[in-house]
Image 1 (tube, rainbow, N blue to C red):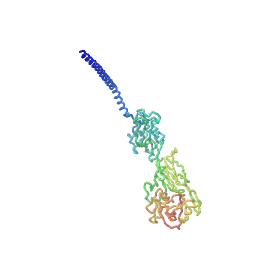
Image 2: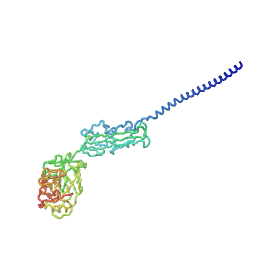
Image 3: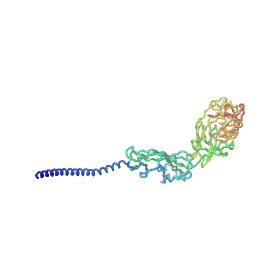
Image 4: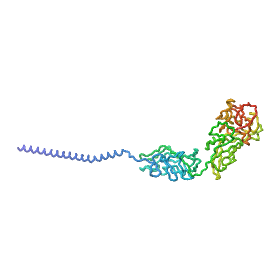
Length: 483
């Protein structure tokens, strides 16, 4: 009995021991689990926040691009925004509102104005503006504040200005507009460009190429005199009737072909000899003008017989009158050719109101009334330092049908054995009947000339350019040419 009691007590003791241990273990498990759970809960918001921050930082922050501006407010988004103009009365004209044309030009608000009075992106004293200049002047912006540091903003491209008158002559912005040269054409153009900052996204703006054309007239109250040379009139005889209308008028002479200095060579005359003369027929002037003599290359143009509608131009230069009868002449001066002449007519105030220009290509020296065989004339010309002319130096006669291919004149040729009046087609073709010119010492008898082949001579009529083949033994007049 006692044994059983002790046995039972011992067993209860053992069970209590394990119960205690079990409770401790369960408590420990529960405690640790709660800590882990708590820590997990504490860590979870941090992990989600970290994850959210990581996702956000991988996306690019989009800002605004830099831009040009002229007033600090309005953004220039296309090149056309820079191609507008403003008149002195405040009128603004843009590519969107520009309806000017050669027949509907813009009229300047005041008399005596130039394009310096027209406000545009181009500074008054220049013909180009670089976008980098606009940036340097502060005419740009960036809403994100990019590009504020030194050298952090750059620009490429430019806008150019070209102003021309009705004759396509380039003029400066300071030149006062005149009715005579209107309408004027103003071209603002750009090949494109860009503005960029060192930082920022996006950090650049590009401008495509563009241009705009404006046409202008001076103020309608401008009192401009529009004088012009309509005709240059040499001898009107001979006239075959086949010269082109744009060049020759049977009653007036040669029409002015160009008022542009670079094209003066299109005008009459291109050939000349001592004491030949012609009259300039002028329109648009109400008073006789003053003309100064013009010299160049050993040749002088002298004006006389001046009226409000005309002036006579006499050309003087190298000649050999004192050696006509000398079979072995000494050399004479050769003019410097080609030689340009610009004749200017001035009003009573000394202002040039009309010009006429021409370019001499060849100069002739006449042997007067000395008749000889062609070979002797050739020797005489050589002694002067000149040469005997070819047929084409004198006329544009087409004599091939009658006299063969060796007898070919200048081009464009006439339709037969006579010359047609044409600028640049020979001395006789330009000046006409050479007997007309007093003091020039030309005869009515034929003049010797070489054909295409050297020493193949033809006699040329100074009246109508008719060609004869007399061989090389007949006596006719001589004339020399240079170059």
